[in-house]
Image 1 (spheres, rainbow, N blue to C red):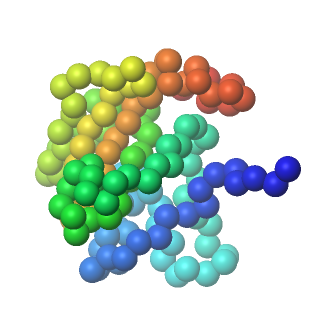
Image 2: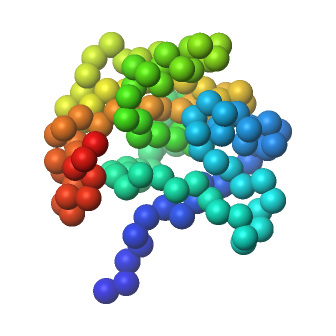
Length: 136
Protein backbone atom coordinates (compact mmCIF):
# COMPACT_ATOMS: atom_id res chain seq x y z
CA UNK A 1 0.00 0.00 0.00
CA UNK A 2 1.29 3.46 -0.87
CA UNK A 3 2.16 5.64 2.11
CA UNK A 4 4.12 8.73 3.11
CA UNK A 5 7.66 7.80 4.21
CA UNK A 6 8.82 11.04 5.78
CA UNK A 7 8.93 14.80 5.52
CA UNK A 8 10.60 15.96 2.34
CA UNK A 9 10.86 19.62 3.26
CA UNK A 10 9.76 22.46 5.47
CA UNK A 11 8.99 25.73 3.72
CA UNK A 12 8.04 28.94 5.49
CA UNK A 13 7.92 32.67 4.95
CA UNK A 14 10.67 34.88 6.35
CA UNK A 15 11.27 38.62 6.44
CA UNK A 16 14.91 38.06 5.43
CA UNK A 17 15.17 34.53 3.94
CA UNK A 18 18.87 34.78 3.10
CA UNK A 19 19.87 35.84 6.62
CA UNK A 20 17.61 33.26 8.23
CA UNK A 21 18.93 30.46 6.01
CA UNK A 22 22.48 31.44 7.03
CA UNK A 23 21.52 31.50 10.73
CA UNK A 24 20.05 27.98 10.61
CA UNK A 25 23.14 26.71 8.78
CA UNK A 26 25.68 28.40 11.04
CA UNK A 27 24.09 27.66 14.41
CA UNK A 28 22.14 24.45 13.89
CA UNK A 29 23.90 22.84 10.92
CA UNK A 30 20.72 22.77 8.83
CA UNK A 31 21.75 23.30 5.23
CA UNK A 32 19.31 25.50 3.35
CA UNK A 33 19.21 25.62 -0.41
CA UNK A 34 20.78 28.75 -1.86
CA UNK A 35 19.83 28.50 -5.53
CA UNK A 36 16.68 26.34 -5.23
CA UNK A 37 17.64 24.34 -8.30
CA UNK A 38 17.10 20.62 -8.59
CA UNK A 39 20.88 20.13 -8.80
CA UNK A 40 21.49 21.31 -5.21
CA UNK A 41 21.30 18.63 -2.51
CA UNK A 42 19.12 19.33 0.51
CA UNK A 43 19.90 18.61 4.14
CA UNK A 44 20.20 14.89 4.89
CA UNK A 45 19.10 14.24 8.44
CA UNK A 46 19.68 11.20 10.63
CA UNK A 47 16.87 8.68 10.64
CA UNK A 48 14.68 8.90 13.72
CA UNK A 49 11.31 9.66 15.20
CA UNK A 50 9.32 12.61 13.85
CA UNK A 51 6.16 13.90 15.51
CA UNK A 52 3.53 15.42 13.23
CA UNK A 53 0.73 17.12 15.17
CA UNK A 54 -1.91 19.73 14.54
CA UNK A 55 -2.53 21.93 17.58
CA UNK A 56 -5.41 24.11 18.70
CA UNK A 57 -5.54 27.54 17.07
CA UNK A 58 -5.10 29.16 20.50
CA UNK A 59 -2.23 26.91 21.63
CA UNK A 60 0.52 28.69 23.52
CA UNK A 61 3.07 26.19 22.20
CA UNK A 62 4.18 28.53 19.40
CA UNK A 63 4.34 31.74 21.44
CA UNK A 64 2.22 34.68 20.24
CA UNK A 65 -0.82 33.95 18.09
CA UNK A 66 0.98 35.59 15.14
CA UNK A 67 3.29 32.54 15.03
CA UNK A 68 1.75 29.46 13.47
CA UNK A 69 4.61 26.95 13.51
CA UNK A 70 7.40 25.57 15.68
CA UNK A 71 10.10 23.11 14.75
CA UNK A 72 11.63 20.45 16.96
CA UNK A 73 15.14 19.27 16.08
CA UNK A 74 16.56 16.00 17.41
CA UNK A 75 20.07 16.46 18.80
CA UNK A 76 22.67 13.94 19.93
CA UNK A 77 24.13 16.08 22.75
CA UNK A 78 21.75 18.63 24.26
CA UNK A 79 24.29 20.01 26.73
CA UNK A 80 26.87 20.47 23.97
CA UNK A 81 24.34 22.17 21.70
CA UNK A 82 23.20 24.53 24.48
CA UNK A 83 26.83 25.41 25.18
CA UNK A 84 27.53 26.01 21.48
CA UNK A 85 24.48 28.26 21.05
CA UNK A 86 25.19 30.26 24.20
CA UNK A 87 28.81 30.77 23.09
CA UNK A 88 27.37 32.35 19.93
CA UNK A 89 25.25 34.72 22.05
CA UNK A 90 21.97 32.89 21.46
CA UNK A 91 19.55 32.63 24.39
CA UNK A 92 18.58 29.01 24.92
CA UNK A 93 16.77 27.55 27.92
CA UNK A 94 16.96 23.86 28.77
CA UNK A 95 13.91 22.44 30.52
CA UNK A 96 14.59 21.84 34.22
CA UNK A 97 13.12 18.35 34.08
CA UNK A 98 13.70 15.29 31.94
CA UNK A 99 10.65 13.74 30.27
CA UNK A 100 9.80 10.09 29.58
CA UNK A 101 11.14 10.50 26.03
CA UNK A 102 14.24 12.61 26.76
CA UNK A 103 15.43 16.15 27.43
CA UNK A 104 14.44 19.44 25.78
CA UNK A 105 15.58 23.04 25.38
CA UNK A 106 13.91 26.10 23.83
CA UNK A 107 15.20 28.98 21.73
CA UNK A 108 14.00 31.37 19.02
CA UNK A 109 15.45 32.13 15.61
CA UNK A 110 16.22 35.77 14.67
CA UNK A 111 12.63 36.25 13.42
CA UNK A 112 11.09 35.00 16.68
CA UNK A 113 10.07 31.52 15.53
CA UNK A 114 10.19 28.99 18.35
CA UNK A 115 12.67 26.13 18.10
CA UNK A 116 12.72 23.14 20.39
CA UNK A 117 15.77 20.90 20.74
CA UNK A 118 15.18 17.30 21.79
CA UNK A 119 17.74 14.75 22.93
CA UNK A 120 15.89 11.41 22.77
CA UNK A 121 16.61 9.00 25.61
CA UNK A 122 16.99 5.23 25.39
CA UNK A 123 13.23 4.72 25.82
CA UNK A 124 12.46 6.98 22.86
CA UNK A 125 15.07 5.29 20.68
CA UNK A 126 13.76 1.84 21.65
CA UNK A 127 10.32 2.80 20.26
CA UNK A 128 11.79 2.65 16.74
CA UNK A 129 9.86 -0.31 15.31
CA UNK A 130 12.41 -0.93 12.54
CA UNK A 131 15.39 -0.70 14.88
CA UNK A 132 17.07 1.71 12.47
CA UNK A 133 18.20 4.29 15.01
CA UNK A 134 19.49 2.13 17.85
CA UNK A 135 23.11 3.25 17.61
CA UNK A 136 22.35 6.71 19.03
